[in-house]
Length: 99
Image (cartoon, rainbow, N blue to C red; front, top):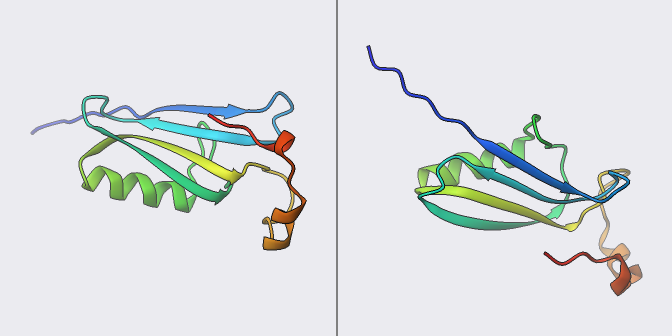
């Protein structure tokens, strides 16, 4: 019998009010390649919970021999409905966060 183990380290960056999620970083093998994935909206994933999109990203990057992923969102709000295209026109530079 052979037992294998792996730990996925997760870091999530929020604003001070926990209303915007800017970055989810998952690391399962720091010696492999890193990927940056840019998504449209912040999903439900957090330090523990995996949403379907985040799972899909991790599963496929692992198959492609990546060991770290950083997921950022164009629209980081985690409250309310999905951002609509018309909302893009209402953004000002003070509402953006650059990592």
